[in-house]
Amino acid sequence: MRIDIVSLFPEFIRQGADLSILSRAQKAGVVEIHAHQLRDWAEDKHRTVDDEPYGGGAGLVLKVEVIARCVQDLMAKVEQSDLAVVLMEPQGELFDQSVARELAQHDRLIIACGRYEGFDWRSAEILGARRLSIGDYVLTGGELPALVVTDAVVRLLPGALGSADSLDQDSFLEPLLGYPQYTRPETFEGCKVPDVLLSGHHAELAAWRRKQQLLLTRRLRPDLFARAELKPSDVALLREAAEELERGEDP
Image 1 (tube, helix red, strand yellow):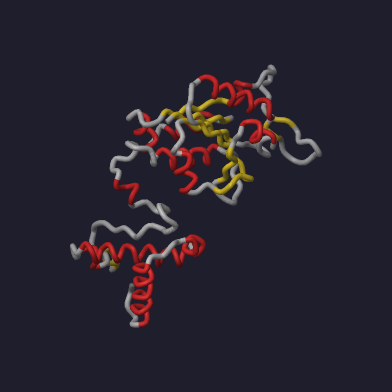
Image 2: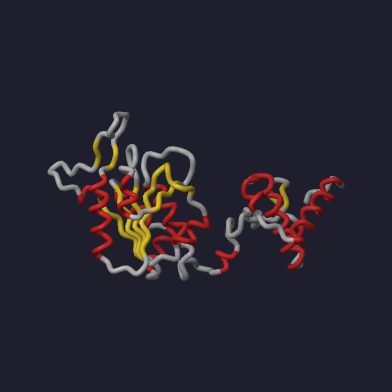
């Protein structure tokens, strides 16, 4: 996969892409990540990329002709069979694991980072772009969101992770949180690792982990829990947990 990220601060992107899994995936030939300065596609001597909004209001808006020229140029430079264009801005749909899986199916991604009051609204229509947001809060720009999307997508690519089993154990593979993890020491300041993790009994361990996923998601993310398709075995585990709580035991 090739990912082109357009930003007013491409050095921010380069630093993030040169660390951890993103760096290893590039060295392994799994992905190419290129950062571009949007001002390189401005045509005036001041390299202007923004202007005041029609109708008045605070802030500036990224000019449609500059982002269109940039993305269209990037599209033309590299032959692609399957391309997705993404605009990172607050009005976009919420980015989640299902969207990451969709984007990971493409051969190329072009991600443009919003700034100021965002992109001229015509940009998405002209470029056939998908608007994405990583959450209901305000950031200075789209660079951090672009790196979030890139990281989530790249780790889904074959060969990006050291162990393929890591993907099978990820949170949000289904609408459930991951189960709690522990490591040495067995006891620390009176807090002990659950006995089931030390038992070596694989069936009991699997049941405990599944139960924890269900209980954590129900408590911390009821919105996710409401979307989960519970199996009969899940219902039985939840009933078992309720009975354990009635007896004063820790499920």
